[in-house]
Each structure stands twice: as C-alpha cells, then as structure tokens.
Length: 262
Image 1: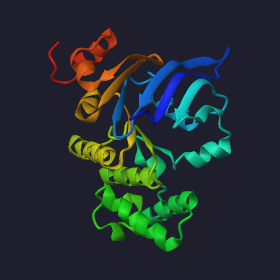
Image 2 (image 1 turned 30 degrees about the horizontal axis):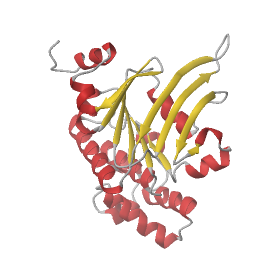
Image 3 (image 1 turned 120 degrees about the horizontal axis):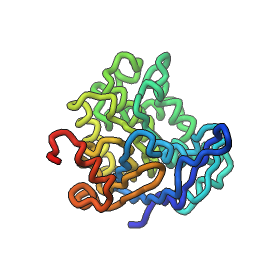
Image 4 (image 1 turned 180 degrees about the horizontal axis):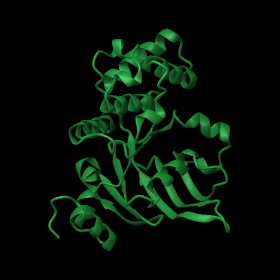
C-alpha cells in the first residue's frame, strides 16, 4: 500500500532577531495506512515543529519550503481556508496536554458534536449518536453519561482518550500524536498506547507518534525516525533502528534508557 502522507525536503524558518532562524533542515518522512511511524529526539530537535508545519499551525511569520503531500495534495500550497477544511477532517493532531485541546467550560458532548456538525454537517441527533460511539471506541465507560460530563470530571488518561476521540471524529486518514502520554503515569500511558495501536490497526490510520521516549517507540511503532537539530538522522524499521542503530546519536538515546547497560 502506498504512502498517505509524504514529507519531502521540509524546511521551516522562524522570525528572530538578526534574521530568520532555520528550525527544520530538509525533513523527509513517509506515513503508510495502518502503520505507526515514531518520530524520536530530544526536546528542541524539531519533532513537534514538524507536526505543526504539516497542519499549517506554525507561528506568525514562519516560512516553509519543500512539500507535504496528503494523498498527492501539497498542503503547503493550499489557501488557509482549504487547509482549515482538511485539518480535523483528513488529518488531525492530539497534543501532549489534553487540557489545551479540551474546553473546560463545555461538556464533552458539546465539544464532540460541535466538531462533527462543523465538518460533517450532521444534525444534532446524528452527531450525538456518533459522539457516543466515538467515546465507546476510545474505551470511555458509560459513553451516554460521559457526553454530559465536563473535562475536569475525568482523569488525565480519560481526558487524553476524549481528545483522541475528537481527533478521530471525522475519520481522518492521518493522526499526529504529539507526546500523547508524557503527562500520564506509566500504567495509564500503556493503556493509551494500546488504544492508539488498536485504532491504527482497526481503522487503517496512519499515525505519526512524536515522542522523546524511545521506550514508547519500542512498544508500538512500526517504523522509527530519529531527529536531531532539525534533521532526520536515521529512519528504518523499529527492530533495526532500536537494536542495530546506524547513527551515533540514536545509540546515545538508546544508552540513556533506564535499565539499559552501556
């Protein structure tokens, strides 16, 4: 099966004192349906910036070159309105802290149905039924009851599952998950990772999993890319990258894992 998302030669320059500062230096990545592609690296390596560039969510004044093709359509050339239509519909993002993506004053049902009605033009009844189905899909107990609840009434892990439900509401082809388990404890983290793996397998999603934690990668990624200083320094199947890395930086990251002998 071919690639659903292809990033080729992606560069990002951000405005800075003394002139633009290059953050990404020709990033190449490819995502396939039903596969999880892990993007690893230290804080500041450019992982999150890559995801934001794909979605057109860069800071004001940012400049991009290269290509980001979603099913052959170059997202970097689209007018803002057309990109806004695709964002949340064909490609979605889940962020590290669900508190930033969930409105604290609106019920879970309100937030899900608003999203569905905006993108899919469903009526209120159909949107509510779809919202309950989505909550069940991400393993939220008592979905009908949960629709009337507010984000603060859920644990951190459940809030992240709700954020994933919203991201998946319009059946996107690509999901970018930016450090989705960092704020969670280990047990809850494992549950969210299993959920992502299952959704990927069941729905044929292409997932870009952004994380600094190679332990997370080893749990669910099919392919792994390693970033450093805005460049992809290594890409390959998970088994090969994590057991026989070709780049010194990848070896350094692996040696830093807890319990790994150096």
